[in-house]
Structures are given as structure tokens and as C-alpha cells.
Image (cartoon, one colour):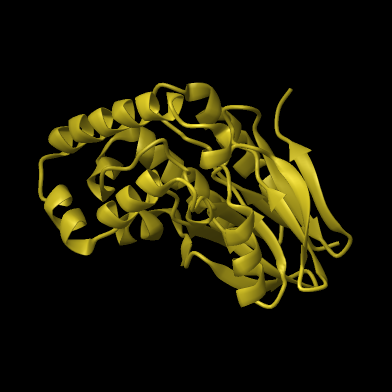
Amino acid sequence: MHHSLLISDLHLGIDRPDLAATLTSFLAGPATQAHQLFVLGDLFEFWVGDDALDEAFAGDVAAAFRALVDRGVPVHLMHGNRDFLLGELFLARAGMNLLNDPTVLELHGVQTLLMHGDTLCTDDIAYQAFRRHVRNPEVQRQFLAQPLEARRRQVGEVRATSEREKQAKSMEIMDVSPSAVEAVLRAHGYPRLIHGHTHRPARHEHQVDEHLCERWVLSDWDSGPEALRVDETGCTRVPLRG
């Protein structure tokens, strides 16, 4: 039976070789049997520009995806809130197709809405303001014009500040807003919704305008690497180690 696999929030970094090893095994193993693979954001802990591909770690990740694509399995990438600067050079090196956020498609017979998930966290007003700022093309141009190490230092400072601010936020604020979920389901014709970002893997049901909609939240790999398998029978979580 044809099936697709979906992953998100791997947060790969040179300081987490275990996650990179799990990804390499996944791409050379279970992923080779899939009809297609979707990466719904935050493949990397952070991405400061495609010139990072000159370094072995990022180059090896791209090569692992390219090997899967060369075996005939298409890979679709959606930007996350940590790696939205993944650009054309990385996509070309890895053989990936870039997906818009959101994207609606028919996935094994079911209309499915794919998102990273951060735009659903509308109660976190400070984060949404920050997101609008860093997605500004001029802000990105100025950032990418800096030397690689300067960009890394800047991102490190932003990440440290973000982690401190998270301690003062409730989990509810950092989770999706039910009204935002209902609005996006309504706007896209009441599809099944699959997203990551919140690090709260679960299956939810939403009653929207007399339509019962299914929402699947993907696992972050810090908590436990897994993929979501989707086929004609529905969705199944697939643990990738342990």
C-alpha cells in the first residue's frame, strides 16, 4: 500500500549527533519504502544561510536527503520558525521541493492541510510580532549580508533570549489557539490538518460548522524521534528508535 511519511521539528545541530544519526538511518531505511516524504519545518535548530553548506555537518544532511531522492522518493520541505532561511542552494543540493505554508493537497484520498504550526499560535502576540519582523525580506537581506560567524552569534543571542522568555509564558499561550485552528479549517474547506511546532504530539478532533475535522500534531525529535505514516486507512505514528 502506498504511504507517505511526515516529520518535523528535528532541530538538527552539530551538538546533537544522535539526532543526525537517527535521521540518516531513517532516510536510508523506512523512508525508502515511502511514496513521498514531507518535512514540515524546523529540520535544523537554526539556519543562518546556505553558505553553511560549506561545512561538513550541513553538507552531510543535504547529501542524505539527496540519496533518498535519487532512489525515487520525492522530499517536500516546509520552512519552520527556526530554519526559514533554508534557500535555493540547500534545496538544490538536497533535491527537495519547497512547500508553501499552508499547503492543501489530497493525501491518500483525504484533503489534508499541511502547516508548520507556528502561525496557529496567535495567543503568543510577542512571538507573532517577532515572526513578522524576521520574515521581512529586507531584514533577511541585511542579516545574510553579515559574515557567517556574526550571523551565528546573533542567532545564539536571539535563541538565549527566546528561551528565557519562554520560562515566563504559559504553555497555553505557546500552544495553538483553538479559534485559529477553527478559522484555518473553515478557510480550507474542513480538511484533515497535520502540523508540528508545538512539541505536543497528539490527535485532536475539532467540530467546526457541523464538520468533524481531525488534527495531528507531529512529534519533536528532542522528545522522541518519530514519523507519521499516512495511507488510505489513516494516520499512524512510527517510532524511529527506542
